[in-house]
Image 1 (tube, helix red, strand yellow):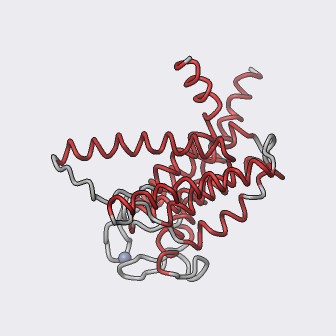
Image 2 (tube, protein in one colour):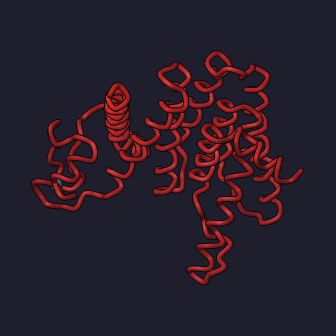
Image 3 (cartoon, helix red, strand yellow):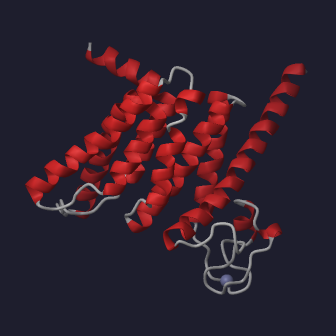
Length: 265
Ligand SMILES: [Zn+2]
């Protein structure tokens, strides 16, 4: 009896945290859409991008509004991109995952802010192949406070993380430039990995480089096989892979590192 009551209240808490995360995801959609255009993320409120009809608060409920409106603007019936509820669901799921892993702590808040910025950066990079400095540069300074918040993080670790993150990609970019006379690695990726290094330290950076390269290579080979084109100059945004690598480190890094070293030893 007590157990089922506990389960029921646990499910309610998880659902509430998911909806809170999804609401923040709704705001992240605004950021993804407006930050590259240098528009205010606070005013005006949400509106339909086609007919400019404002979206009232009661139709701005994450995921649910999309379902009620059947994915169409209520005035001009333009289809609303399925991307909006997807970003809301992703953010809601990360809110739950962060709560399960870190509880109601300041550390959980730190990582959730980090995740939110990575979500915005990833989708802007997918859309426009840029990573706005206005996100990554303040991010480097904000997440350099990690030694004050994250247990086991030291100031030396943060500094080493930033140097390893920024330096390693900078080196790759320089080598690539000399071989190909072309910019393969964007400056945006360098600043993003510096930000990731500030938050996760040198171990996080090495893990992120390793896993994101692996995922990027797998995705690249898959794209080449599917499209039957060996276009090595195809510009694949690397930001989402770096973000995925960093997220994997936060949630499963210790486990995967142990597993990997057991495998090779
Ligand atoms: Zn409309």
